[in-house]
Length: 90
Image (cartoon, rainbow, N blue to C red; front, side):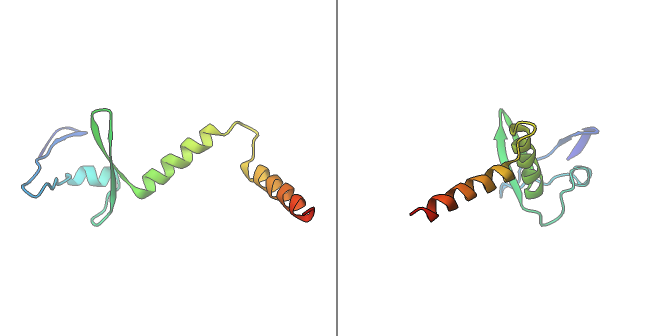
C-alpha cells in the first residue's frame, strides 16, 4: 500500500479476500479496529461505512423528505387519538 495523494491509496486483496485499509484512511474516516462495516456497491464503487455513519445518513435522508412545518410526531399522536375514538365506539 502506498499513498499517491492525500486521499488515494493502493491496496491489495490477499488470498483470504482481506484488504488492509491504510492507517491514515482509518484515522480520517474514524474507523477503529474491530468496527463492523456495512459494505455497499454504489455505481461502480465499493463503499465502506460504519453503522453510525449509515444511521446518520438515513436520518438525514428522512428529515430531508419531510416537508417543512410537518411534525410526524404530531401526526402520529393525532392518528392514535382517532383510533382510540373509533375503538370507544365499538
